[in-house]
Length: 343
Ligand SMILES: O=C(O)CCC(=O)C(=O)O
Ligand SMILES: [Fe+2]
Image (cartoon, rainbow, N blue to C red; front, side):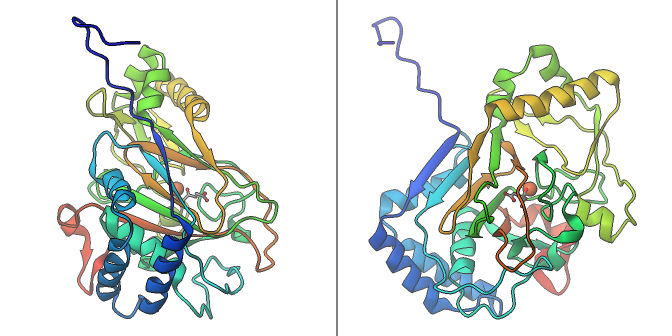
């Protein structure tokens, strides 16, 4: 379409997937700077500051693309960052879900926390990975068929990462962003991470289904880690909420992996249709070492395909952070002994 005097050219639709690749010399310089930081756990705020210095040395255009991803309302919901530095040697993938023992260098942690720091502040949640900031996402034998990040034998449905909260809403104090960084691919290299953007979902849904999904007809079950460890494997449901909310052009979406209870038969049908549409509009990536996904946890939902775990120390291994743009709004959840860890 061309612009005419009386009809200006419409802005091109913003793509919902971005790809950012580091040139080799930039990767190597970043790797050297991150190696020099060492283990971040002793003083994470000091480490975060040094990661910021390391990432600040990236070429301006590249750095701006990373920062813009976290900053703008109309930015894509997911970005694949490629050709990142990696650790020269990796220990076995921990069979118990982590953390790893005997990791000699901390480049992966630097990549993960450094990217996270460009988007906001990494946080821990006491009921998820014992409150650690760096989450290991690894297949665990006992959880192979669960709707959690320990699974492998079942498709992990399109979901948002949510947090159980006594206020009755699980979509308020949850992370704004996730960073998923790949240390080891699965044996066959087939595990897929998918992302469906609520803008694409809304455009693809029938209007009456969208209206149902925008109504408070759904109760979210708390995450599997919470129901397993705290609630004796019983459901802990949120207040009724809509799954899609907010202004039409910039919708927010929430879906719990561990079950959504629809309050009417129409809502139940809309929920099935939603998972179908997510599959149809999604972007899919087979993560490889040196790649990280930046995921906006409000603009879209993510999923994981099945893959075969062998529990042999060479299984798929991702590291993940939960990132808040701002810690102030979730101050009612902070633990007294750690300013980054929340209940
Ligand atoms: O394993 C993946 O690719 C994604 C798992 C997931 O949903 C998560 O870690 O939040
Ligand atoms: Fe997830």
